[in-house]
Length: 96
Image (cartoon, rainbow, N blue to C red; front, side, top):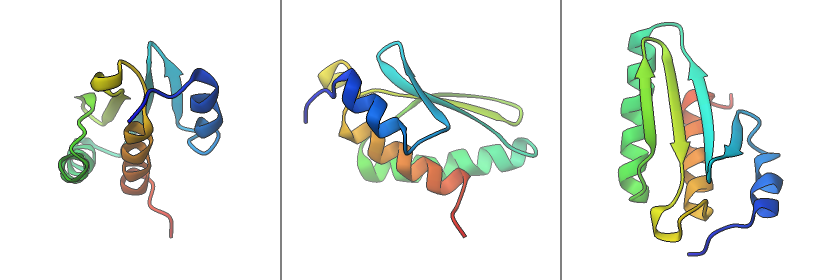
């Protein structure tokens, strides 16, 4: 596993419009209808985090979930972050 370059990160983010790159991590904020829906998404995301053995920095205030992803082992963003971001996207905005 290696740290992605800024150019690689920005290119990959074209497929993740809800995400931004700054402070050596990728970040997103998701708003739900209520606290229950937000917490439910967090619970589902937690299972994906465990499966990928990769855990976000995140916070929740009522119906808003804020997530930051980076890979501590490479001191930046890696492929693991984009795999988890994709899993998160599939949970919070499922494709029908």
